[in-house]
View 1 (cartoon, each protein chain N blue to C red):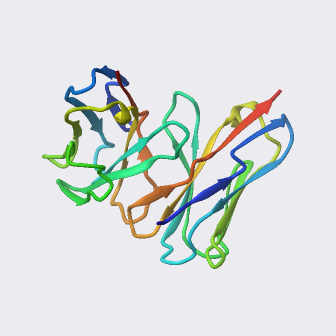
View 2 (view 1 turned 45 degrees about the horizontal axis):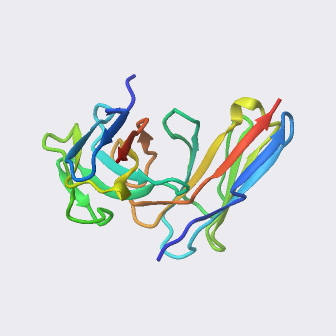
View 3 (view 1 turned 30 degrees about the vertical axis):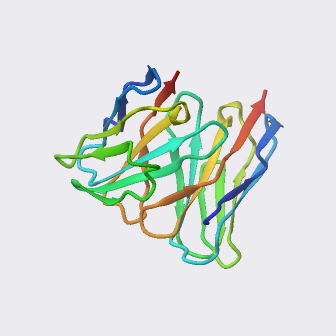
Amino acid sequence: ILNVEQSPQSLHVQEGDSTNFTCSFPSSNFYALHWYRWETAKSPEALFVMTLNGDEKKKGRISATLNTKEGYSYLYIKGSQPEDSATYLCAFAYNTDKLIFGTGTRLQVFP
Amino acid sequence: GAGVSQTPSNKVTEKGKYVELRCDPISGHTALYWYRQSLGQGPEFLIYFQGTGAADDSGLPNDRFFAVRPEGSVSTLKIQRTERGDSAVYLCASSLRGQGGEQYFGPGTRLTVT
């Protein structure tokens, strides 16, 4: 059974704090690793699709790294803002199109 | 441009009834996916279409669930003889060509079976 694990399950930080989450996935049959942000009452929004070992991607204050050999990815948020409050999901693709999602990390940023 | 839309946004039905959930993907996207998210879980893959055909339906939990995409655009997820355990948020996503690329999600349909 393919399993994707995310930690922590939830996180509360103050505005301005930097934070990071972990996604662990199977290291065999890797195709891609996706990160999504899901705000309440909205659609999940793609942040990154990562395919290469050692990949680092950045979008504004959010960045992600990928280690396919050991099966983990980190998502970093620098200087958290209240609008960053959301559930962050990672998903592992072990063939081209079937995504296995983790249960997410729920981030709440307090002003 | 228009994103992925799903209707209805909420559906309450009685146990044993039949329901249909609709997904309108982004125009021109050939790949379409259905996921189900139960409380406290991440989205769970149900079925993937490439064009009109179901390329992978291995996630459909049983034969009460069926999905179609007759013209390669709009898709309908059909659930027969609904059970309380079917209560979940049903998400649809589309992708330009599939092949592991970014998936664009709709807002979901929240199904409640009473």
